[in-house]
Amino acid sequence: MPEAKDDLKREKVRIVPISNIEDFPDHPFQVKDDESMDQLVESIRMNGVLNPVIALKIDENHYQLISGHRRKRACMLLGIDRIPLIGREMTKEEAVIEMVDSNLQREHILPSEKAKAYKMKYEALKRKAGRPSKDNCTPSEHNFEGKRTVEIIGDENGESKEQIRRFIRLNELTPELLEFVDEGKIGMRPAVELSYLQEEEMRDLVDFIDNEEVFPSHAQTIRMRALSKDGKLDREAIDTIMNEEKPNQKARIKIPMEKIEKYFPAGTSEKKIEETILKALAMYRQRQKENRDAR
Image 1 (spheres, rainbow, N blue to C red):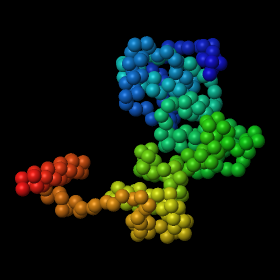
Image 2 (image 1 turned 180 degrees about the vertical axis):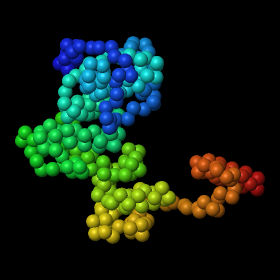
Image 3 (image 1 turned 180 degrees about the horizontal axis):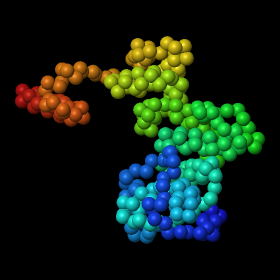
Image 4 (image 1 turned 90 degrees about the vertical axis):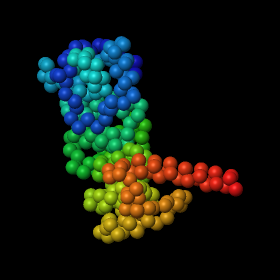
């Protein structure tokens, strides 16, 4: 890392209008206005931008951001219109690889972000090696300097080649299922199995999850994938698999909404209904206790 810092010092730093810097196309890493952003904003307010952003030089006045999307956003929130920048001339493939590598150093990275980043790097390495990847980006058996591309990515990021393949497969999920993975509601291995379902089958599963608030186990997703392969995974099959009792599954009480909604004003949120019911049950329990104590 010290060598990298020395390299930055040797490169020419320019102060560039933020309006001349566009975000990297299909940038896979989210830039959120969260607590971490608040801290970065405060740091820049007190100390300025300590490290210049890195960008692909489009022409003398226009750039495409490679590293520094959060710093750029923080400056915009502060009303700062210029930022220190190092512009580099490189191929699109080299820019993609540097963008992915620099952003993978972040402390918190979502599975969906890794999935998109690894796919972008995989495709860029293939193009750079003179072997364009197929549209589905399924890792191939081609060698690249004696290693498969997934091995190269794994070695550079401390992941096994199998794990790189799993992350790339996540890109086949619908946005809803991928969000469940980000939220930790569906694990990596079940998610990989689901990535082989047809899009309509995924939508049917999402409908079931939304209605029942139950998520599939790894074993259940393996069965779904097998049925999908045979063309037999319909809504009924998904319901049958998902309604099977899983080991350690907690008992659930289901009350039809039509039996409850008459007690609440129209438009009351489910969260408010749940809070009110729990509060009413607590009051009921307290009343029972008072009645017993009065006897």
